Length: 419
Image (cartoon, rainbow, N blue to C red; front, side, top):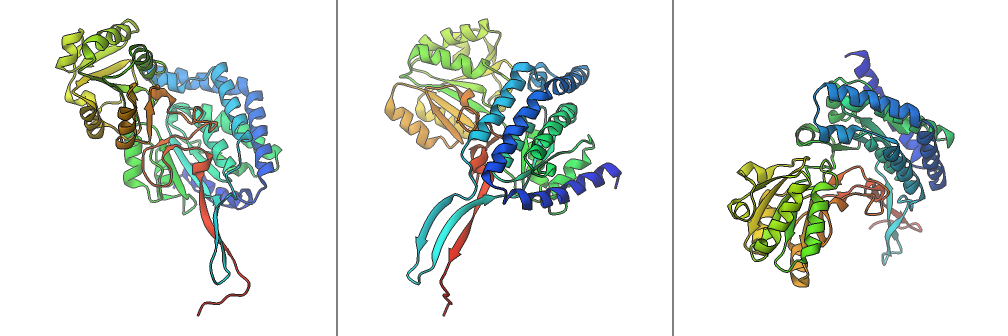
């Protein structure tokens, strides 16, 4: 094994030692550490932006797409937003040691179900450097340690961020090894994380493209919180308000095309399509969005013919698939067949239709009369999120601090023995 990979393995052991200390650290100390991390990131802004500029230049030279570069790039406003998120998480309620329920048995035993840190969390992600600060802060807020493995295109950015975060931990008297990032681009490091770093990792969180998540799901030897692709839908119901439908669709698709909450397929009810779809399509086209529609949509506005694969594609680009559906049932059937269980929205003034959509669409996030781009932990009030979990066990939707704890049962007796 190379020296770099041996160092990666040692990170697991170091994180396990640190986790025994941070899990019992007072909430106030972790709060101080989060505030110090925010100050350190802000103070190191010039170094972080310089490292990121080098990453972006390298990625551009490698021919990465504009949407990829958008996810990778930091600028002063984005860095300020990361600092603000750290402060928000510092001010958030602490999720550790919360009594979820309590009861007493006839024999006098007192039972309590109490939240507790998970332990050591591994986060494998691709191009977004902000994942480093979000993951570190949320894990620490929940009393966990984190090991970060960024994609090769963002290694310099993440290393610069990690240096600042570790300084903040030291400022508050917590172990620097509560936050570690893997510096080597060797893909074998991902394999070591999938194997659990010698038993050190308790949970893995992949955040990236479909190929990354698929590999983690198929090869991981530790539990995972899966963040699948964001194949999000917006459905314009027959009873939709026209102005709301236009504004929501434009925002859901075009606010930022590179985020997982961007709408990729627009479904329009046949009853309203002749009046609604040409107006929306024209506005999307004028904003530079390429349209791919079924035959009914093409008959209402010029656009490229959609293929079967378009209904299954997360574009992360200014491209939108459009389908005219017969009714609410047809829209929900399309989402059930092609959706990824991430985020889906209905635009309607019909309360019963909205109620059915929310009850029957089995996605992590469902919205009524709002843009799918609200699929973001910051918009939920979590301060940030590590990803949008599309599985159904433990964590679902935005993974914030509350989703990064588990629980244990604490039982108090007065000398009881079992017959």
